[in-house]
Image 1 (tube, rainbow, N blue to C red):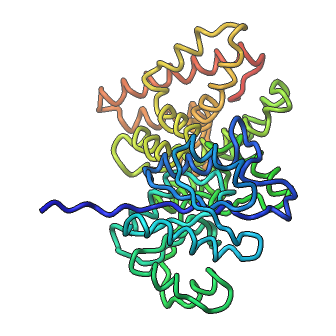
Image 2: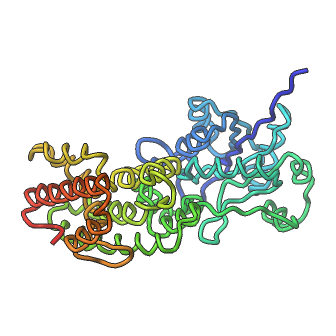
Length: 391
Protein backbone atom coordinates (compact mmCIF):
# COMPACT_ATOMS: atom_id res chain seq x y z
CA UNK A 1 0.00 0.00 0.00
CA UNK A 2 1.40 3.38 -0.99
CA UNK A 3 2.00 5.96 1.71
CA UNK A 4 1.90 9.66 0.96
CA UNK A 5 4.50 11.77 2.71
CA UNK A 6 2.92 14.52 4.74
CA UNK A 7 3.73 18.05 3.65
CA UNK A 8 4.74 21.13 5.58
CA UNK A 9 2.57 24.14 4.77
CA UNK A 10 3.28 27.84 5.08
CA UNK A 11 0.56 30.04 6.55
CA UNK A 12 0.92 33.74 5.67
CA UNK A 13 -1.06 36.29 7.64
CA UNK A 14 -2.22 39.30 5.62
CA UNK A 15 -5.68 40.09 6.96
CA UNK A 16 -4.80 43.14 9.06
CA UNK A 17 -5.50 46.77 8.27
CA UNK A 18 -1.91 48.05 8.71
CA UNK A 19 -3.10 50.78 11.05
CA UNK A 20 0.32 51.83 12.30
CA UNK A 21 1.81 51.91 8.79
CA UNK A 22 -1.25 53.78 7.44
CA UNK A 23 -0.62 52.06 4.12
CA UNK A 24 -1.47 48.48 3.23
CA UNK A 25 1.77 46.64 4.05
CA UNK A 26 1.46 43.52 1.86
CA UNK A 27 1.19 45.59 -1.32
CA UNK A 28 3.93 48.11 -0.59
CA UNK A 29 6.69 48.00 -3.23
CA UNK A 30 10.06 46.45 -2.43
CA UNK A 31 12.35 46.57 -5.43
CA UNK A 32 10.42 45.37 -8.46
CA UNK A 33 7.83 43.42 -6.46
CA UNK A 34 5.49 43.85 -3.52
CA UNK A 35 6.34 42.85 0.04
CA UNK A 36 3.81 40.01 -0.17
CA UNK A 37 5.34 38.66 -3.40
CA UNK A 38 8.78 38.61 -1.81
CA UNK A 39 7.48 36.79 1.27
CA UNK A 40 5.77 34.15 -0.87
CA UNK A 41 8.87 33.72 -3.02
CA UNK A 42 11.09 33.08 0.01
CA UNK A 43 8.96 30.07 1.00
CA UNK A 44 8.66 28.77 -2.54
CA UNK A 45 12.43 29.03 -3.01
CA UNK A 46 12.82 26.99 0.18
CA UNK A 47 10.76 24.20 -1.37
CA UNK A 48 7.44 24.92 0.36
CA UNK A 49 4.86 24.34 -2.38
CA UNK A 50 1.73 24.48 -0.23
CA UNK A 51 1.00 28.00 0.97
CA UNK A 52 -2.19 29.37 2.48
CA UNK A 53 -2.76 33.12 2.89
CA UNK A 54 -5.33 34.52 5.30
CA UNK A 55 -6.91 37.66 3.84
CA UNK A 56 -9.23 40.26 5.28
CA UNK A 57 -8.69 43.97 4.65
CA UNK A 58 -8.45 44.76 0.93
CA UNK A 59 -9.02 41.16 -0.05
CA UNK A 60 -9.93 42.17 -3.60
CA UNK A 61 -6.45 43.64 -4.12
CA UNK A 62 -4.65 40.64 -2.65
CA UNK A 63 -6.39 37.85 -4.53
CA UNK A 64 -4.83 38.62 -7.96
CA UNK A 65 -1.35 38.59 -6.39
CA UNK A 66 -2.05 35.28 -4.65
CA UNK A 67 -3.42 33.72 -7.82
CA UNK A 68 -0.37 34.83 -9.80
CA UNK A 69 1.90 33.22 -7.20
CA UNK A 70 -0.32 30.09 -7.02
CA UNK A 71 -1.11 30.59 -3.36
CA UNK A 72 -4.36 29.45 -1.78
CA UNK A 73 -6.52 31.92 0.12
CA UNK A 74 -8.97 31.86 2.98
CA UNK A 75 -10.98 34.92 3.99
CA UNK A 76 -11.15 35.98 7.63
CA UNK A 77 -14.54 37.62 7.87
CA UNK A 78 -13.80 38.79 11.40
CA UNK A 79 -10.53 40.57 10.53
CA UNK A 80 -11.79 43.98 11.73
CA UNK A 81 -12.89 42.73 15.15
CA UNK A 82 -10.54 39.85 15.98
CA UNK A 83 -6.81 39.58 16.64
CA UNK A 84 -4.03 37.82 14.71
CA UNK A 85 -4.58 34.58 16.61
CA UNK A 86 -8.02 34.33 15.03
CA UNK A 87 -6.38 34.58 11.60
CA UNK A 88 -3.92 31.84 12.56
CA UNK A 89 -6.78 29.55 13.55
CA UNK A 90 -8.73 30.46 10.41
CA UNK A 91 -5.77 29.47 8.27
CA UNK A 92 -5.09 26.24 10.14
CA UNK A 93 -8.72 25.14 9.81
CA UNK A 94 -8.62 25.85 6.06
CA UNK A 95 -5.52 23.71 5.70
CA UNK A 96 -6.94 20.86 7.79
CA UNK A 97 -10.01 20.75 5.56
CA UNK A 98 -7.71 19.72 2.72
CA UNK A 99 -5.19 17.42 4.40
CA UNK A 100 -3.36 16.59 7.60
CA UNK A 101 0.03 18.31 7.23
CA UNK A 102 3.24 17.40 9.02
CA UNK A 103 3.18 20.92 10.38
CA UNK A 104 2.67 24.57 9.53
CA UNK A 105 5.12 27.46 9.22
CA UNK A 106 3.32 30.56 10.50
CA UNK A 107 4.60 33.92 9.26
CA UNK A 108 3.24 37.46 8.92
CA UNK A 109 3.15 38.52 5.27
CA UNK A 110 5.30 41.60 5.93
CA UNK A 111 8.56 39.75 6.70
CA UNK A 112 9.83 39.53 3.12
CA UNK A 113 13.58 39.02 3.43
CA UNK A 114 13.91 35.74 5.33
CA UNK A 115 16.51 33.68 3.53
CA UNK A 116 15.24 30.36 2.11
CA UNK A 117 18.20 28.70 3.87
CA UNK A 118 16.64 29.68 7.21
CA UNK A 119 13.27 28.20 6.30
CA UNK A 120 15.01 24.98 5.30
CA UNK A 121 16.87 24.95 8.62
CA UNK A 122 13.55 25.03 10.46
CA UNK A 123 11.98 22.24 8.37
CA UNK A 124 15.12 20.10 8.55
CA UNK A 125 15.16 20.50 12.33
CA UNK A 126 11.62 19.15 12.43
CA UNK A 127 12.48 16.14 10.30
CA UNK A 128 15.72 15.47 12.13
CA UNK A 129 14.57 16.02 15.73
CA UNK A 130 10.77 15.76 15.48
CA UNK A 131 10.29 18.92 17.55
CA UNK A 132 6.71 20.17 17.95
CA UNK A 133 7.44 23.91 18.10
CA UNK A 134 10.48 25.42 16.40
CA UNK A 135 11.43 29.08 16.32
CA UNK A 136 14.47 30.64 14.62
CA UNK A 137 16.57 33.01 16.71
CA UNK A 138 19.11 35.66 15.74
CA UNK A 139 21.25 37.38 18.35
CA UNK A 140 19.06 35.99 21.11
CA UNK A 141 15.87 37.44 19.55
CA UNK A 142 13.04 35.22 18.34
CA UNK A 143 11.89 35.60 14.76
CA UNK A 144 9.87 33.95 12.00
CA UNK A 145 8.71 31.60 10.65
CA UNK A 146 7.29 29.72 13.62
CA UNK A 147 6.82 25.99 13.07
CA UNK A 148 3.93 24.15 14.73
CA UNK A 149 3.82 20.36 14.34
CA UNK A 150 0.73 18.37 13.40
CA UNK A 151 0.45 16.95 16.94
CA UNK A 152 -0.23 20.45 18.34
CA UNK A 153 -2.62 21.88 15.74
CA UNK A 154 -5.79 20.74 17.52
CA UNK A 155 -4.31 21.84 20.85
CA UNK A 156 -3.68 25.30 19.41
CA UNK A 157 -7.20 25.50 17.91
CA UNK A 158 -8.68 24.71 21.33
CA UNK A 159 -6.48 27.17 23.24
CA UNK A 160 -8.64 29.65 25.17
CA UNK A 161 -6.06 31.37 27.34
CA UNK A 162 -4.86 34.96 27.21
CA UNK A 163 -2.48 36.63 24.74
CA UNK A 164 -3.41 34.55 21.71
CA UNK A 165 -0.56 32.82 19.88
CA UNK A 166 2.07 34.16 22.29
CA UNK A 167 0.03 32.89 25.21
CA UNK A 168 -0.16 29.48 23.58
CA UNK A 169 3.63 29.47 23.12
CA UNK A 170 4.13 30.57 26.73
CA UNK A 171 2.02 27.61 27.85
CA UNK A 172 4.38 25.13 26.21
CA UNK A 173 6.99 23.48 28.40
CA UNK A 174 9.47 23.22 25.55
CA UNK A 175 10.14 25.25 22.41
CA UNK A 176 13.06 24.37 20.18
CA UNK A 177 14.88 27.60 19.37
CA UNK A 178 17.57 27.39 16.71
CA UNK A 179 20.19 30.05 16.08
CA UNK A 180 20.31 31.02 12.41
CA UNK A 181 22.73 33.32 10.53
CA UNK A 182 19.88 35.51 9.27
CA UNK A 183 18.93 38.78 10.94
CA UNK A 184 16.10 39.23 8.41
CA UNK A 185 13.91 36.91 10.51
CA UNK A 186 13.41 39.92 12.82
CA UNK A 187 12.37 42.62 10.35
CA UNK A 188 8.82 43.46 9.38
CA UNK A 189 7.12 46.65 8.19
CA UNK A 190 4.93 47.69 11.09
CA UNK A 191 5.66 51.41 10.77
CA UNK A 192 7.15 53.71 8.14
CA UNK A 193 10.60 53.60 9.76
CA UNK A 194 10.56 49.78 9.53
CA UNK A 195 9.63 49.97 5.87
CA UNK A 196 12.53 52.30 5.13
CA UNK A 197 14.88 49.86 6.89
CA UNK A 198 13.48 47.00 4.82
CA UNK A 199 14.15 48.87 1.59
CA UNK A 200 17.73 49.49 2.65
CA UNK A 201 18.20 45.87 3.70
CA UNK A 202 16.82 44.69 0.38
CA UNK A 203 19.61 46.53 -1.45
CA UNK A 204 22.25 44.58 0.53
CA UNK A 205 20.33 41.33 1.06
CA UNK A 206 23.17 39.12 -0.20
CA UNK A 207 25.88 40.92 1.82
CA UNK A 208 25.73 40.12 5.57
CA UNK A 209 26.64 42.75 8.14
CA UNK A 210 29.27 42.13 10.82
CA UNK A 211 26.87 40.62 13.36
CA UNK A 212 25.57 38.21 10.75
CA UNK A 213 29.11 37.25 9.78
CA UNK A 214 29.73 36.27 13.40
CA UNK A 215 26.53 34.19 13.30
CA UNK A 216 27.84 32.47 10.15
CA UNK A 217 31.07 31.66 12.02
CA UNK A 218 29.00 30.17 14.83
CA UNK A 219 26.94 28.09 12.41
CA UNK A 220 30.08 26.83 10.64
CA UNK A 221 31.99 26.28 13.92
CA UNK A 222 34.85 28.42 12.65
CA UNK A 223 37.77 28.00 15.12
CA UNK A 224 38.80 30.97 17.25
CA UNK A 225 42.26 31.27 15.71
CA UNK A 226 40.71 31.46 12.24
CA UNK A 227 38.28 34.12 13.46
CA UNK A 228 41.20 36.19 14.75
CA UNK A 229 42.91 35.85 11.38
CA UNK A 230 39.74 36.93 9.56
CA UNK A 231 39.32 39.95 11.82
CA UNK A 232 42.90 41.03 11.13
CA UNK A 233 42.37 40.59 7.38
CA UNK A 234 39.14 42.60 7.71
CA UNK A 235 40.92 45.43 9.55
CA UNK A 236 43.61 45.50 6.86
CA UNK A 237 41.08 45.28 4.02
CA UNK A 238 38.99 48.14 5.43
CA UNK A 239 42.06 50.37 5.57
CA UNK A 240 42.74 49.56 1.93
CA UNK A 241 39.06 50.14 1.08
CA UNK A 242 39.16 53.55 2.77
CA UNK A 243 41.92 54.52 0.35
CA UNK A 244 39.57 53.71 -2.53
CA UNK A 245 36.62 55.80 -1.35
CA UNK A 246 37.66 59.01 -3.08
CA UNK A 247 36.97 57.24 -6.38
CA UNK A 248 33.79 55.43 -5.35
CA UNK A 249 30.52 57.25 -6.06
CA UNK A 250 28.75 58.32 -2.90
CA UNK A 251 25.70 56.12 -3.46
CA UNK A 252 27.91 53.01 -3.78
CA UNK A 253 30.28 53.61 -0.87
CA UNK A 254 28.25 51.88 1.83
CA UNK A 255 27.74 48.76 -0.29
CA UNK A 256 31.41 48.71 -1.33
CA UNK A 257 32.61 48.85 2.28
CA UNK A 258 30.09 46.23 3.35
CA UNK A 259 31.20 43.87 0.57
CA UNK A 260 34.84 44.26 1.60
CA UNK A 261 34.08 43.70 5.29
CA UNK A 262 31.86 40.65 4.73
CA UNK A 263 34.27 39.14 2.22
CA UNK A 264 37.21 39.56 4.59
CA UNK A 265 35.41 38.23 7.67
CA UNK A 266 34.12 35.16 5.84
CA UNK A 267 36.93 34.34 3.40
CA UNK A 268 38.23 31.51 5.65
CA UNK A 269 34.92 30.49 7.21
CA UNK A 270 35.63 26.79 6.49
CA UNK A 271 39.42 27.03 6.75
CA UNK A 272 39.70 23.64 8.46
CA UNK A 273 38.24 21.62 5.56
CA UNK A 274 39.95 20.63 2.28
CA UNK A 275 39.61 23.13 -0.58
CA UNK A 276 38.22 25.56 1.96
CA UNK A 277 37.71 28.41 -0.49
CA UNK A 278 35.36 26.39 -2.66
CA UNK A 279 33.65 24.76 0.33
CA UNK A 280 33.13 28.09 2.08
CA UNK A 281 31.75 29.68 -1.06
CA UNK A 282 29.27 26.83 -1.47
CA UNK A 283 28.05 27.24 2.12
CA UNK A 284 27.65 31.01 1.74
CA UNK A 285 25.71 30.61 -1.51
CA UNK A 286 23.38 28.16 0.20
CA UNK A 287 22.78 30.82 2.86
CA UNK A 288 22.06 33.42 0.17
CA UNK A 289 25.23 35.47 0.67
CA UNK A 290 26.50 35.49 -2.91
CA UNK A 291 28.86 38.48 -2.73
CA UNK A 292 31.12 37.17 0.07
CA UNK A 293 30.83 33.73 -1.57
CA UNK A 294 32.54 35.12 -4.68
CA UNK A 295 35.32 36.59 -2.53
CA UNK A 296 35.72 33.35 -0.56
CA UNK A 297 36.05 31.23 -3.69
CA UNK A 298 38.60 33.58 -5.26
CA UNK A 299 40.77 34.65 -2.33
CA UNK A 300 43.23 31.76 -2.32
CA UNK A 301 44.51 31.99 -5.87
CA UNK A 302 42.04 34.21 -7.73
CA UNK A 303 40.53 31.09 -9.32
CA UNK A 304 43.85 30.05 -10.87
CA UNK A 305 44.37 33.52 -12.25
CA UNK A 306 41.16 33.76 -14.31
CA UNK A 307 39.89 36.79 -12.43
CA UNK A 308 43.29 38.43 -12.68
CA UNK A 309 43.29 37.90 -16.44
CA UNK A 310 39.86 39.49 -16.59
CA UNK A 311 41.08 42.46 -14.53
CA UNK A 312 44.07 42.93 -16.81
CA UNK A 313 41.79 42.93 -19.85
CA UNK A 314 39.43 45.65 -18.60
CA UNK A 315 39.53 49.10 -20.16
CA UNK A 316 38.08 52.44 -19.06
CA UNK A 317 34.72 51.65 -20.67
CA UNK A 318 34.32 48.72 -18.25
CA UNK A 319 34.70 50.62 -15.00
CA UNK A 320 31.48 49.15 -13.59
CA UNK A 321 33.01 45.67 -13.81
CA UNK A 322 36.21 46.94 -12.21
CA UNK A 323 34.33 48.21 -9.16
CA UNK A 324 32.36 44.96 -9.04
CA UNK A 325 35.62 43.00 -8.88
CA UNK A 326 37.52 45.34 -6.58
CA UNK A 327 36.26 43.99 -3.20
CA UNK A 328 37.61 40.55 -4.17
CA UNK A 329 41.04 41.97 -5.00
CA UNK A 330 41.10 44.10 -1.85
CA UNK A 331 40.48 41.03 0.33
CA UNK A 332 42.95 38.97 -1.71
CA UNK A 333 45.64 41.59 -1.13
CA UNK A 334 44.79 42.10 2.53
CA UNK A 335 45.07 38.35 3.13
CA UNK A 336 48.64 38.48 1.88
CA UNK A 337 49.47 41.35 4.21
CA UNK A 338 48.48 39.30 7.27
CA UNK A 339 50.32 36.44 8.93
CA UNK A 340 48.15 34.44 11.32
CA UNK A 341 46.40 37.26 13.20
CA UNK A 342 48.95 40.08 12.76
CA UNK A 343 49.71 42.51 9.93
CA UNK A 344 53.00 41.69 8.21
CA UNK A 345 55.39 42.76 5.49
CA UNK A 346 54.58 40.81 2.34
CA UNK A 347 58.19 40.28 1.28
CA UNK A 348 59.16 38.98 4.73
CA UNK A 349 56.16 36.67 4.76
CA UNK A 350 57.13 35.32 1.33
CA UNK A 351 60.72 34.76 2.45
CA UNK A 352 59.62 32.74 5.48
CA UNK A 353 57.34 30.58 3.37
CA UNK A 354 60.08 29.86 0.84
CA UNK A 355 62.38 28.77 3.67
CA UNK A 356 59.66 26.59 5.14
CA UNK A 357 59.06 24.76 1.86
CA UNK A 358 62.59 24.87 0.47
CA UNK A 359 62.66 21.08 0.09
CA UNK A 360 59.25 20.87 -1.57
CA UNK A 361 59.54 21.89 -5.27
CA UNK A 362 55.78 21.65 -5.85
CA UNK A 363 54.99 23.93 -2.91
CA UNK A 364 57.70 26.39 -3.96
CA UNK A 365 56.23 26.55 -7.45
CA UNK A 366 52.78 27.26 -6.00
CA UNK A 367 54.24 30.00 -3.79
CA UNK A 368 56.00 31.57 -6.76
CA UNK A 369 52.83 31.48 -8.86
CA UNK A 370 50.88 33.16 -6.10
CA UNK A 371 53.60 35.77 -5.68
CA UNK A 372 53.48 36.56 -9.39
CA UNK A 373 49.69 36.92 -9.23
CA UNK A 374 49.87 39.22 -6.22
CA UNK A 375 52.51 41.49 -7.77
CA UNK A 376 50.59 41.61 -11.04
CA UNK A 377 47.38 42.40 -9.18
CA UNK A 378 49.19 45.15 -7.30
CA UNK A 379 50.45 46.76 -10.51
CA UNK A 380 47.14 46.55 -12.36
CA UNK A 381 45.26 48.10 -9.45
CA UNK A 382 47.89 50.82 -9.25
CA UNK A 383 47.24 51.68 -12.91
CA UNK A 384 43.50 51.97 -12.24
CA UNK A 385 43.73 53.87 -8.95
CA UNK A 386 46.87 55.94 -9.56
CA UNK A 387 48.54 54.75 -6.36
CA UNK A 388 49.60 51.51 -4.67
CA UNK A 389 46.77 50.17 -2.55
CA UNK A 390 48.97 47.64 -0.79
CA UNK A 391 52.01 49.69 0.21
